[in-house]
Image (cartoon, rainbow, N blue to C red; front, side, top):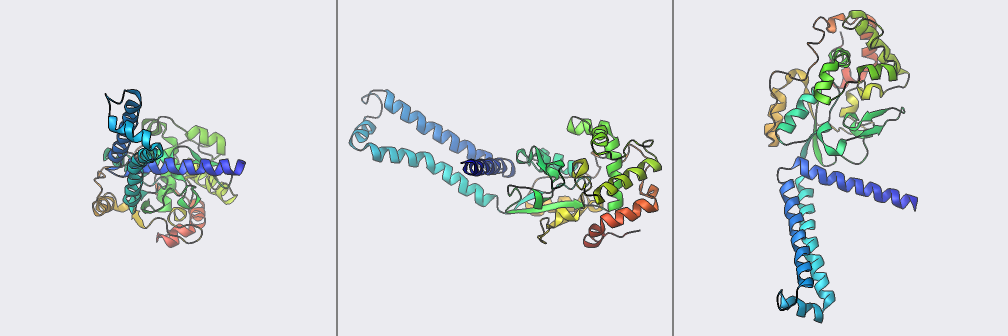
Amino acid sequence: AGAGAGASIKALEAGVSFTFRCHQMLPWGSWLLLVAIFFDIGVLLWMYLAATFPQKIFCPAWHTAWEKSPRACAGLLGLLLALPAVTLLLALHFGLQGRLEFVHIPKNAGTAIEFAGVMAGVHWSRKSVSLLGTTNMPDGNQCNSYHVPPALLPGGYYDRSRIFCVVRHPYDRAVSEYLYLLNDDLQIKYAGNSWGQDYADLYSNGLYDYKPCTAMGLNHFVQRTLLLYKQGHMYIDDCHHVPQAQYVWGPDGTQWCTDVLRIDNLPQAFNRLMVIGGYKVHLDPEPEYTSAEFCPNVSVAMLDEESRRLLREVYAEDFQRLNFTAY
């Protein structure tokens, strides 16, 4: 009984997720839902009126037919109620084939792309109702579901879609992560709360062990988090240290992200992909969601040799498969 209930819950969750994807990803999905809902409401209202009022006042032919063949009439009503729902599901099923879906690799312009999508009525990543909440990761930590690599995300969220993602040089990404966790104001502005101190306390990631915005603070944080990763804590800090290659390819070699954009080529590469896909989403040239100005003195040049060595080791697959140069 427990297994059956679990399967039913999973099926319900999949159905709810599918419905929300229809609503959020297709410009006509919401209208079809409204048409189906109002049609069914109309049929139910008609049934109520037909059963309540005397046959001489409301639809005498229906009363006569019901008295002669109630089963046939009940079947007809069921068909009338089911027809719009079935039509809707079929239309949405084929409409979702090949839709553009965004895999949010942490610290790779994800927030900017999410907000650009919302402005055009497209809900990607954290803006998708289907990706609310967290996912339990193999190392015992939890990550927001929109930060989880596709191969580890249950429910088939990315099925039947054309997936794009953004990648950047591992050195730049590590520096960006350090600046981002220090920037409480930016976190509050776009997410409603800050978590830099919480992560430092929860994961002992060394963020505040040294004075912020210094070479010592940067290198200590980078080395501390990468050593934790090597020790098996791969999904700390909300999956922000997971290699980018794991978002592009699954463990079985499946390539999830087929359109791999480099952050250096934004916004042109992104806007071009949107035009090709028929989406009215546009990314502005000036980055709005960035921590680069928080510590203007901090840059990749501050990474010492030990930090670079660890970055090359932990992100060896990123350097190799995504064609980044180690220096």
